[in-house]
Amino acid sequence: MASQPTIKNINTYFMKVASWNVNSIRTRQSQVIDWLKNNPVEVLCLQETKVIDQDFPRLPFEELGYHLYIFGQKAYNGVAIFSQQPMEDVTMGFTSIVGESLTQEFDEQKRVITGIFQGVRIVNLYVPNGSEVGSEKYHYKLRWFKVLKEYLKKILEESTQELCVCGDFNVALEDKDIYDSKRKENHIMASPLEREALRDILTIGLKDGFRKFNDEGGHFSWWDYRTGGFERNRGWRIDHHYLTDKLYEKAISCIIDIAPRKLIKPSDHTPVIVEF
DNA sequence: ATGGCCAGTTTGACTGGA
Image 1 (cartoon, protein in one colour):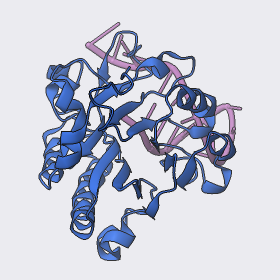
Image 2 (cartoon, helix red, strand yellow):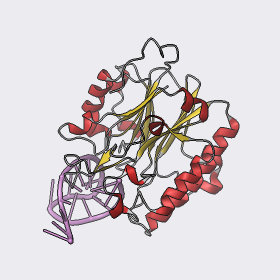
Image 3 (cartoon, chains in turn blue, purple):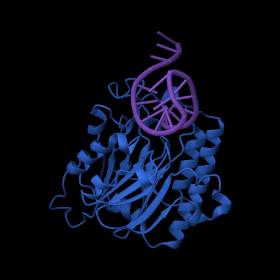
Image 4 (cartoon, chains in turn purple, orange):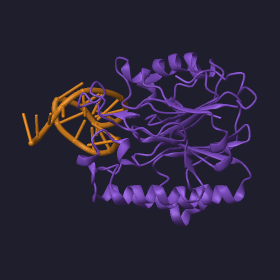
């Protein structure tokens, strides 16, 4: 776990932003509440909430003092941001940022939410899974990344804020982000075109917060339910925080908290927390 | 070597996840 700010860095401590694909907020409600009590992060970005907005369990999180910004749909996808103070300029989906001509096929799936917290623009993403390399869903994922780049470019052009772009990217950028990379060379989430699409987005000026602090392999944020994956540490690092330069320089930690993955009936993902 | 689990809905059978 990340330590509390020390004397040395206390003047630079500003906030923690966590990202967690919970695989249904209703099923994981009590785990998220418990986690927030132990980890009172300023901002929590959730993915795969899997519930329409009117059925989202707001109250228990509001009772913890959080403001909720939610963008959900029935059964699939769904993103949310919880924040300890109100956020400004909250926007759901791609369309209002980049216009309808690019995004018609994308905003039916609720995967994008952004807002400004204490002068930092938070972008919370649930990138399409892609199913299998070469499938229709795979090509949808690649097109989605192209629109994401336009979206982020537009946000960067139009704002003075630094960006924290986080979420479930469904891409492991490097071989060391996968437990057995040699056997996954053209696997979904590791294929060259997916990695190229994500790397291309990062060229607009974003850096991986986790890799500021850790060069090692073997650090994962998702483990398959089916394979006994967690027990064998057969995982992937696919949940990321990408930061613009000043935030990257300011960052003082980025850690993966594997404790929730050890619980009974866990999400298959576990939270990742950046502190700056 | 293979496939294995989980959540939600279309419910005891599908889709989608990754």
